[in-house]
Length: 145
Image (cartoon, rainbow, N blue to C red):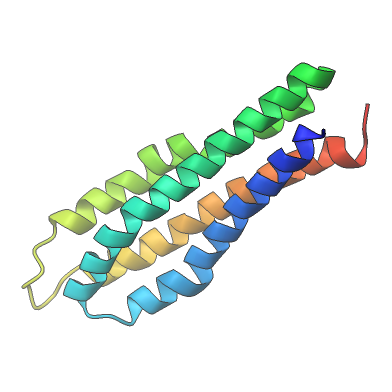
């Protein structure tokens, strides 16, 4: 059994999910009016956060199992990298979400669209974390100790 390969696969699923959000979901969300945009975000954000959180923890756990099997520290590096999505989501993305949900929707000039664009750009940070984790996991897979 090669748990490291599974850690890489789960990190790749994390990366795929974040790419989907950035390339498909966010552009579709921006085509909606302000009220529908925020309502859609409220629904999808909880589910998306849950999926990404589970994938990150699962990948890091499997990487830790691989580390325990062969003692290669590169698995810990990859596991910590994918877990970096948690503080990123909390400290970087959550304040934008709070602003989005706090803005009154009935105003004629609303900052909702700009905040939503900014949030879409911040989503790419998760994709970068997923890519870095995949690279960290590919390193020991490609160059075993």
